[in-house]
Length: 125
Image (cartoon, rainbow, N blue to C red; front, side, top):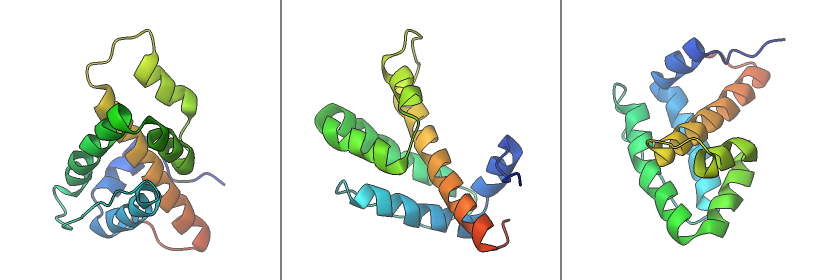
């Protein structure tokens, strides 16, 4: 069975406030282990951007000041370490590596929520 995780599905999910609330819960679960919390206003139009704007400085701070916590977070979220290392240390110069990491983290957290809902039989937006 294919899970609904195509790029168009991600775009649709990013517009769903209640689904993003579940993503915030997942993010907080993972980030709290590293001592960080995320707030969420629930504003539909700007919800995904709001999450990005909150996570980006936290990720940047962790990379600069708490490298071990950053890698613990990456493992806890179950991100592809090779992708993370390529963004951070790859030969290709990145315009905004922190933004790329933030997007990668948000997409993985969204994916975890969607997979959990899919297998629990809940209706996805």
